[in-house]
Image (cartoon, rainbow, N blue to C red; front, side, top):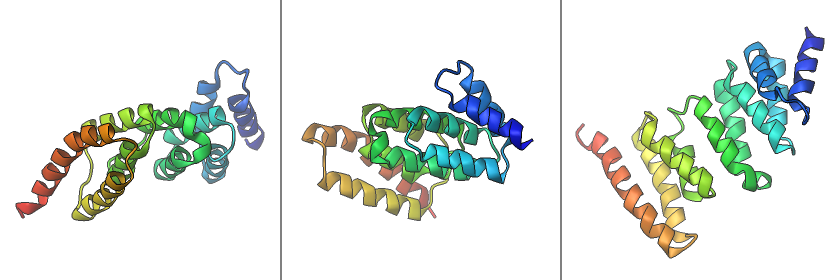
Length: 175
């Protein structure tokens, strides 16, 4: 079995492999603790294409939460800045219901593609929101307001974010 797993890993990591997605998905379905650790190492590695495939494998595994942690780490790792959007895109394969603050942070501080995808997740995913979630998101919002990319981005994001906070706070003001 170990030999078969290594062959799948090798095929997934081979830059000339045209069926790399197939091997990624297969590894995800077979993932045990050891495979999970190897996949997380690959997500943290220097080859973004392999990291993406390992992320995909983790999304298909029973280690969804730990896999998502690794993907989020890759998103915020400066070495992946130019490929950040690919990692944000693979997030759709994970359960995002508990990750409002992480996605909100990507929306605020990610590159154009990442921010656009994060906004779509914010609009489409049903999140588990608590007062603590709102406070954490507000902390990131305040940081963004005091460290803007440019004035125009603040205006646009204020237009989208302020109603979002009002709506979330309304959930708890009626209690």
